[in-house]
Image: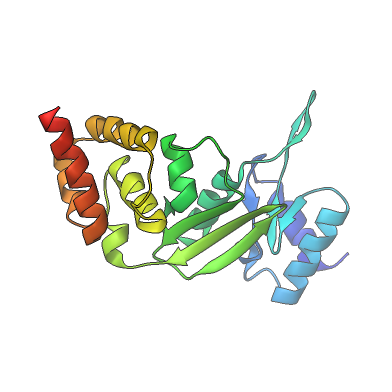
Length: 203
């Protein structure tokens, strides 16, 4: 057993069950090659679990269900925390979070102020998509998801059920925050949401 392996194995004992582990956690404790080799060996012997390229988990062990792994969304946010970047769900992922669709997406797209990258977790694809500071400036918990979902998916051919759900969500958002976020939306999304608001006022 190498010194790097022993050091990393001891260091991992400080982690909590469910924590994400990446090679950069151990910089300065050996060469990149030695760190990756140590993590690979620890995964082989069952100390940690490999969930993707360069991504490992210290799995939660439930007496009834066995290993319990975090969701892909939890992994995405944990990775963003590790890399000190911001992410915002977009597209189908934003739609799912808003309850606009019951279908769980197999491709999770997040806009980020970091670099673009794609991560495969079993059958799920996590995509970090670099975007502009303008989109990352959205503040509202609901309005940001609404705008980013529509920015990715478009506003054409949305059925009445989705429009009614969007109307309900707009009502739940802080009006001041929503108004600020609306200014950051693209012209098509701005006009679409403004029409929903105006129709709601006239109803």
